Image: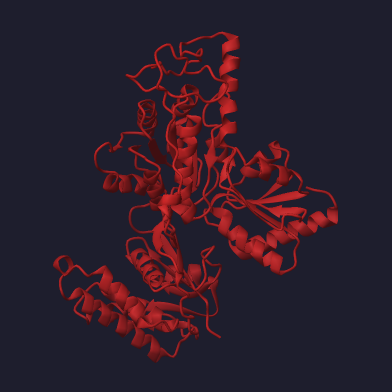
Length: 571
């Protein structure tokens, strides 16, 4: 039987170049019609340290990185010892026979990658030899990779006329060496190419594309892992008349810059990670108090403090909802896939414009670095909302309405002063108790304008539900499908609109005996929020810096449901 799924992990030291090889291998397969997803994890130092990237290739859309490995490409002995236990039975360990000595254990395949690569005349062709060997192990036609090489290095003026034939020769040498070894993992089934155009990119780029489509014209950012590539993308692509990108000196400057830009009428955004988000607390409070539209992206990483700067986590939910002191509840949108990063960015700007205030877009490291193919958005069908601007005369009371009111722009009639102090309907500072009550209720009532979020649901009559959030969506849904296949009566829910939650979703969740929330943090932050809303929710937590494995989730959910049924009452 042909295989429909193939998982390979490249493991070694940072700076060895295999991350780009992994992305190239994934990209080549998507161009051939397969689905692909990558996952990378690396240490925080610039070079060196244990690093690995996993690539999953499939004939079907991919939800997760894959629990076990068909092939481990080990670049050193430490990588072999660390990862070999995750190679499935019948899998293969691939290594450079000239740089490593491995025992003949029946599943280790040594090929002289570097020597064979250099024999082509290209001193850097070793990785192409490796890719050719992988193609042979999964019985992939070499044309898939050769076509990728031709497209990737087609510019002979830049790369020279020899690079393409040398790399194709290296692919053939790797394929031949693997074929002579006798190793095989079975043939990967032909791709089932979708009947629509696709895009292959990562979460940060998808998010940036969505922001630009939503009308972003002002970006200020400070470099911080894993959000830096959003700033780099903006510097390269947010160009032209009326566009502004600036690398600021701190996250405090970033938040104040976008608040000022929003006050001036721009659609403004910044992106950061947990430590930078903490520094933005006071500026976010100002945006909430003065009711100024802006979007802040928090690409979550392990914390607190410096924490795990290059690992993934979902531990900023509390901070995102209540970043400032006093009574504040900021809108939160958290995409669950690379594709959803695009739509989440558009939705964040729509919300910011509609309720006129700051919106938090919670991404995470696992999404930011993940490369994946998905359906190219039909931009004509993606709704974009723009600011309701006041166009009357002077004497306008900016904050008079109980909810949102048109926003004057500086220099136009109805202009107002926006500062961090409590104010009356005109915007003048006041300390009167009744005014503070009036304005506090206005600010919170505006959240009702954002209750249009969509959500997913399946098997909704089941008394117990699984509801992950953010990047735990993929493992959560794959676990749900396995549980259903095992005749477990469980429901599925997911939404990227976390605050406010869609009211129909909240009503359904309140009717469940138990809602299990897989999330990557210690405190069970999202389930705590659900309990505050009257939902009998309980978290299944993990805080290793890595995403969930599906098998682990299936086991833990099954155990919890069995315990619940034995108890007869919700936990």
